[in-house]
Length: 304
Image 1 (cartoon, helix red, strand yellow):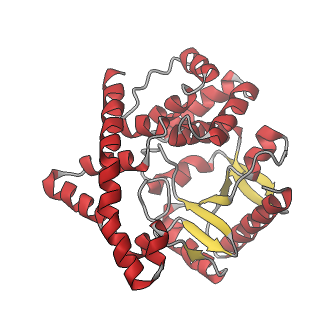
Image 2 (cartoon, helix red, strand yellow):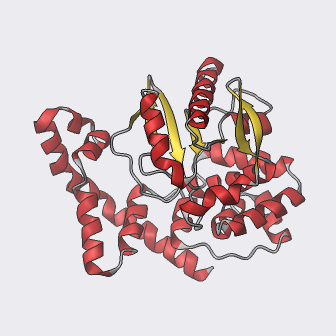
């Protein structure tokens, strides 16, 4: 991605943050330009394709309204599959994506409490020519480890971020980050992210971290396919009716989701019908691998 494209994303991030503040919506910029400056010395080699913004859960609906006033539209098919994103978390305008967060993946603290827990780790930074709120170094360290755990070993960008952070930041920074992770009830994911790298394992051992990863964290850290995560979510539903309901919603989701999921679904009514016919076949083909991956993650979590 070119430096000009990154500057365009930063400009949009600044525009949205300024509009949010005018409407009384607190907002902070996550990752992107902040990590590029902190870990890559502003080098454009740290690319990003969207602007990640954190808002308080209580301001989520106001943020939606503000984005619509700015001519953004929600991406079809997005929804709350994980607690780290807003219900409508991807917003598009002229090819630029804004991702809205009310929490972070791996955090078990309720979304209503996340902003208050992180607010003390926010400072003023410069993005897109404007002063905006960003996470300080301790907040960034926590987020970098959580982001690595979220995407796992196959996501090179998150691993590169983690490697640079582990090499640059002191043990005291990581100690404070571990304390923040504990406050966020994210210690499992935080330690799992650290232990993806040799230096991270040394730091985790030095800090005396001994948290057992849960199944969801183990799946993400192994870069498991979405089908395996979907199976885990289904099995976590209460009762047989809950599990069957989740299975039916996954097999026959909304038309908006199907149009987002399949190019065929965007080819009129007949294409949408064909996509619905193909969806159960697609899931069935992935079921054996998803089950195998899920069972391995469950054994790993149990053994740990």
